[in-house]
Image 1 (spheres, one colour):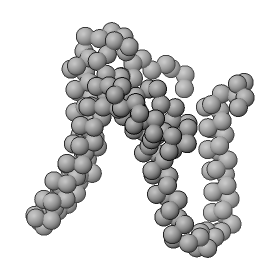
Image 2 (image 1 turned 180 degrees about the horizontal axis):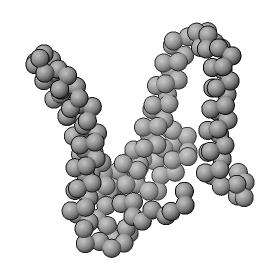
Image 3 (image 1 turned 90 degrees about the horizontal axis):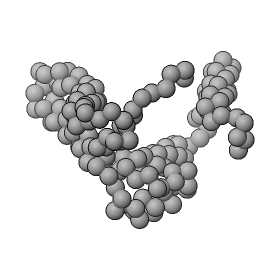
Length: 166
């Protein structure tokens, strides 16, 4: 790790390199290489990545800041479980948002099967559920924190002032 190179620069460089490699593979029509990789290997990799990303997101969802998410996945899970007693009110907000997302999806799928004529409407409502939940929870955050002037005094973690120039 070089302190003179900013993390954003490294991330942008890696994204550019990955994009260039994918463009090169596409231009020479080498997509057939993917057929060599077994479906079990691809599914296993995708499952492992999903578990790893989920484990890294859980401490932030629960408001636990003492867990180092750059540790190996099993250590992140262990440290999260050890520090469950330090979970904050942020957990209630995040978990309720997840519950509402899945509940809306379940209702729309259920009603889509029961009302065949309105299946498209229920599909589009299920698709819009993320926007609905974001708007509702922004409103909740605004109402709870409307008299707060600084982000550190908020009842639960908020973004606060976003610096310009990015």
